[in-house]
Length: 83
Image 1: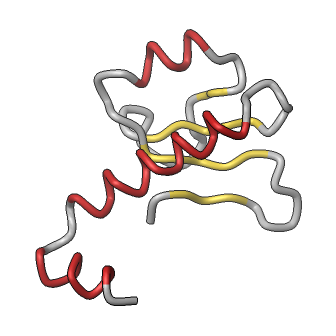
Image 2: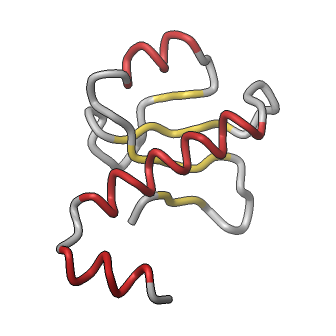
């Protein structure tokens, strides 16, 4: 899992983050918060308040996805590539 949201409201979503940069990003973006139900060291909640550009949001989603894929086995990564 690389992201999670309430599909009824989509007021926010959670993404996996690089632990070494997570606090810096939270300081830089008010809409990036500690998550309620995930590890604060590895995850952040993004409030969809319009303050973060779509480009940055897509970059964060790519980072989150790539962090999760990197943890998969080689076999799982190959299977994912063939979807």
